[in-house]
Length: 297
Image (cartoon, rainbow, N blue to C red; front, side, top):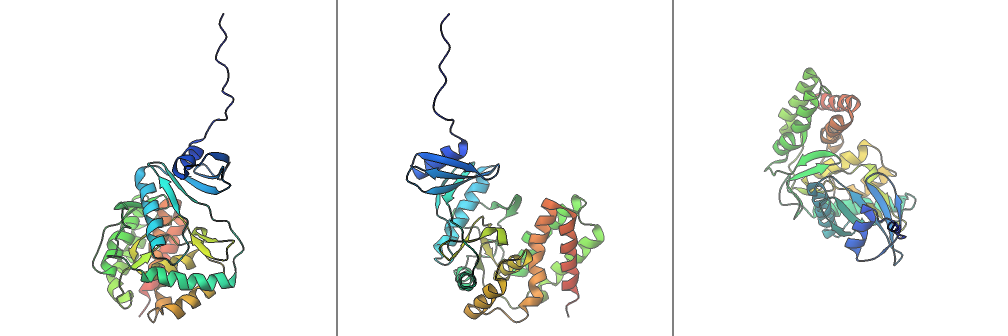
């Protein structure tokens, strides 16, 4: 009887490691899985990169285009994109350090500069990015509009409200209150502003405090929008030294009077996205924000 094939002594190469090698042009020296969709991959030159898996080219293409568009502003630090395909996005890794007040103030100024870099229109996708994009795991359509109140209602609030109602997460009477806010947006939105270059998913988990003393932003849902939306999302889930961030932002690029009263209006979008993804608790917060907005004179 002839002997069977000898076992291959080489370790199996994971899809994450394979993607990191392909896009970096380097051999892989090690890998640490952080989750089912994210891995740190160490290359043979000592660098560590991040390999992130997504379902479908639309998600990886949108995120890669968003990172490049934000980096092109030359403002906030953004990890470099090494490459992507239909399933994997590979970027530089950000070594992390402690949150510090000086870094927070610098981040506020840099965020103001990022927003000031602008966008062609409300809802405009990054160059090379798809119209059908994502915010987290939720689809997000980057269709453009001429004025912020109408665009925000049509493309950022109502699609998620309808989905939440269909899923039974938001009740019909509650939905009516959110719809009334959409009807009143022209008066609730404050003075008109040009489209800003938004990160689009600016919650604390996407704000990395680097060991270099700078803030780095990851996982964008980048598009043209209202700058107060990024700031409202940053406030929604908390952020270290947030008041230092906002104070430095205001000094660099003052917000229109009454912006504090508009925070809930801008939080409707992320709260309804979270209601679609995670359920009733976020729906209740969205309804509370809508009712508070309706009580404004």
